[in-house]
Image 1 (tube, rainbow, N blue to C red):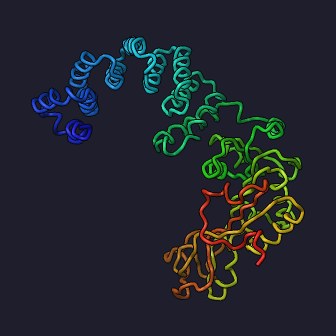
Image 2 (image 1 turned 90 degrees about the vertical axis):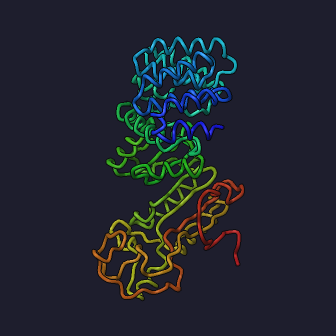
Image 3 (image 1 turned 180 degrees about the horizontal axis):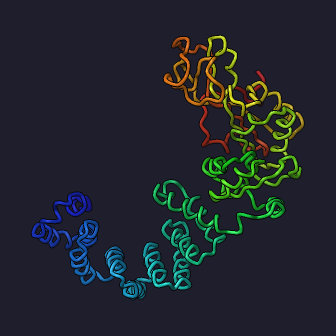
Length: 436
């Protein structure tokens, strides 16, 4: 039945001109489905025929005064016409009759109606009442964040928009995510909170405010990665580049320009993430120190990801190279063996319980865009025949060549792979509990 209604009223704009047909179908469908009034009104409204939309939704509100969907469409039209007080009146009447059964969307609509009138206190009260019964309803969370935005309470607005962005991808549409990201950026740009002092953020670490630390956060992409793949809510990014820290903050992330070496040698976060970071460190002693620090401050685990460098010698023999192996910005081209040597040493110091090393995204043919001829210029990205020298020949790579090296480090002693269940990899190079 719903499919029939949608076909009649939303799929074919031509039907908007067939009023006799629509009236006949309406009489039939509204007997069984009051939603027909909504679909019909929406169809007219979206094609610019507000009078016809109002005509049919008025019939619906007369026949079904307590139908939330019909009321929502009716008050949408009222808002378009500037009749904002009327929208409040209708939704308040609805709540008088349906207080115990009102859906979350009804709270969103009543809050929005008050917000449109400029009564933000009442809007806040309505939104909070809705969240008491439906704390994970995305529409309510968005409305709650919009109220703080209109108040220009920027720290609170940033907090609320961040909550929206942390919702499951199954609940937040791409359009919602884009809107929330833009709002969050505005809030952070206006908020004094994003200018928190170094001492305030370090104090936050000591008090357990942050769930994880992102080493070398750059513009904050790895903070988002940690939230997505490790179900984390609140992380702190650390970097030495002030410009990148500012960009991360403008995206809504907590980030600070700070010396990682100065972090206290105690368990201050649940985990640390070193993603696309170690290859940029020129001093091998710093690499070891950063890995050691990550293990010392984390109570549960450490995650590492970097480009794959093990195949450099093999590819060079055939006049080829991976483009990331010839970057000025990658002075530390660590192989999986070098990872093993460092992590095994940390294990022997009892700083970790177990570790495993993995690789992802195998490259099979030399014509892959990630492979360049050996004489291609430095600091390149994907290969282009129009831009770069020709490759010697197309060949199948008979040695292991991958895109990423990954390390999982378990600190707590619980199931080694449990925290990393969402991280894809294609082959396992080493597991510390297997010595053969």
